[in-house]
Amino acid sequence: MKPSPPASAAAGSSRPPGVGVLFNPTLDEFVLSHGDELDHLAVIPDRTWVDRGPGAVPRFDDLARPGDILEQVARRAPLVMHCVGMSICSADVFDEPYVAQLAHWRARHGCAWASDHLSFSRIGAGHEHNAAMALPSPYDRELLALLVPRVRAVQDRLGCRFLLENNVYYFDYPRQELSEPEFLNVLTQRTGCGLLLDLHNLHTNALNHRFDPLGFLSSLDLGSVVEIHLAGGVEMMGFHTDSHTGAVPDAVWELLRFVAPRAPALRGVTFEFHDSSWPLLRTEGVRAQLQRARDIVSPATVV
Image (cartoon, rainbow, N blue to C red; front, side, top):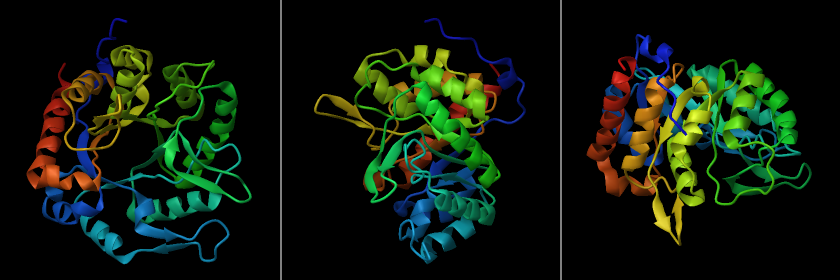
């Protein structure tokens, strides 16, 4: 498929997208010492509280240390939310108290936008089970009918732009009604939500399922992309894994180079890595990843 040309709206933008990092426990000192190098700090709010589970009173208790650090960082760089517990694609679970907790956290920190994964991890409205990982969902019209009112309700409750992240998957559901880009395009059109385009997820899926990632991007409405995630991964047992390990591979940087000038609503590019990778990166490694992202997206206004 021939790639689409860059969007003229991106060429006319006066401000390039910001560059930030996803906070993890190894970054305490980094974000306090190098906060001036971050245009934003992405935070998993679920890591800043204890959740005793549905029905518990009180259900949520804030943790002191991450809250103190984030209060300091927020004076220099805006925070954005990257949630992991919504499980928005669960058939019989829509956790409204969890969404209310997110709204409280968002109001406290003034986050410009919030995101979660287009996936599910929880099943059962009675005795609940949690897979503790983001499981892929089928791209069909029944799921669209489930998601549209939920996404609208989340956006209304949070009071900010809500983004959904394209998921990584290691198996295909048979006989899906829509392709992934078609599903994402319809969902954003019907709800007004944005996309968190995880380019390493796309890279992983393209390698494992042998499709062209540029063809995928050319079929996707890039005007809905508000944030991009970058990460690294490793090969394991014949698969490329989305392990968030180490530096971003060159192929993912090339995808960013393609997307950035074609995404007129893009506001942030976020590097994420698992905290176990800190010994591979250290301060200079993280700074190098942030600078490489900035070098790519800053010229996105002049194509």
